[in-house]
Image 1 (spheres, one colour):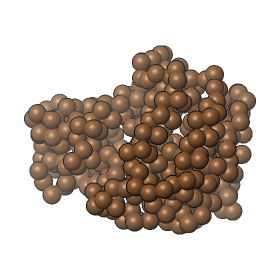
Image 2 (cartoon, helix red, strand yellow):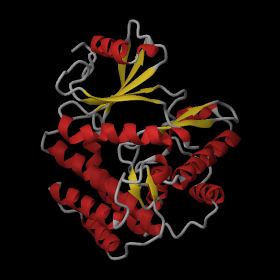
Image 3 (cartoon, one colour):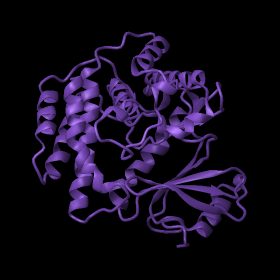
Image 4 (cartoon, helix red, strand yellow):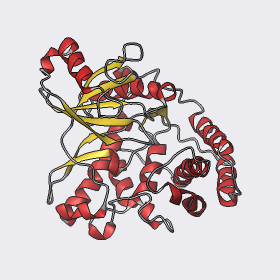
Length: 344
């Protein structure tokens, strides 16, 4: 391996020249642009087009390899739809040869644009532009949920029947595996969610982590637009309104007490972004449907993030994980749970 952790750049160049000569790989340069708790993402320059390489986190190969194939499959399937996604190049099982990563990895073309994740970035846009950007994000979500999974080869991508019940069971199991202290608000939220699981009657492709900072944005001033939706590792088939619940959570995350910079967000309605009701209106108008009561979906989103943060807190206290801000995660669990109770 080279000094790029988890990626052999010389091996990547040899693999590209052998399997994708159209990309005309020269002297490649790569650097990590995201990684740690999630899958590792590398920006690669020097080929015919800028590339992205995705691989599982270091030390977590077997548990995450399936994500690579899922991400590549869904991005490839959505290429011919109105949903903006990067151009997929290939997915490779490199476990035995260890030429590039020693894991399953996938390659895609790097889509243009920047991730908008902090309020300081809003200065690049007018208030009208931020209003437009919010609507653009909502309309792309409606486009995703309108895709017929079978028509794009994703008919077997998940089991939509009983999806919400399985989700709740999965996250309850995750919480039980991370218990190290009393979490009364989180337990109460879990009980209330289990007592009233909705049935929207709709099935579609669920992104699973749909939010502003999982998109790339191009343009400036009053003309920003979403150029690509990223991070499809949690995608499946299920109740699409789960995505609206997640979008609500991250759209309003700054309202959670004590959240600070632990879970940053650029969303600021005072700067011009629409409020969440405006996103729902844009989604409903584009989809041509009436959106049901989202209280359960919003509460579930808060519950899911609270369980994730409790897991980080558990591993941090045990000395099994390190990272900037990890020491703050435990303090956010109960406020998030109370936020879920408030909206349920």
